[in-house]
Figure 1 (tube, rainbow, N blue to C red):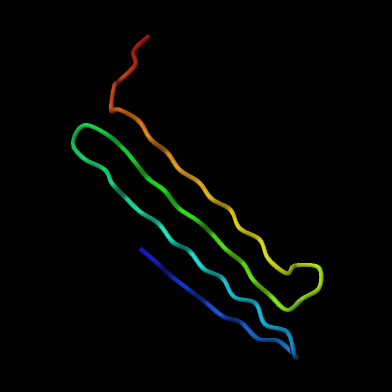
Figure 2: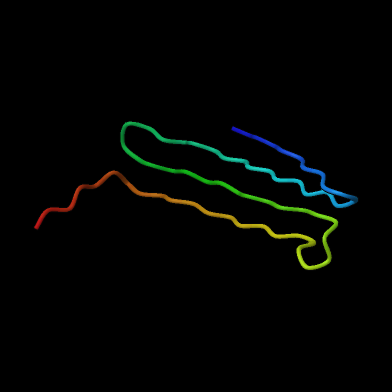
Length: 62
């Protein structure tokens, strides 16, 4: 999965990017992703957030 958006205001540009990978199976969960922001605004030149979740599918009970 990938998605991009670009916004312009006055002479500034902001670009958003979202990338994700879903490798789920019947026995496990494996999700990875990244959100990136790049701009010409001095206070926000570049920001990247990476995330992930991985589990074996084991259920826990009280």
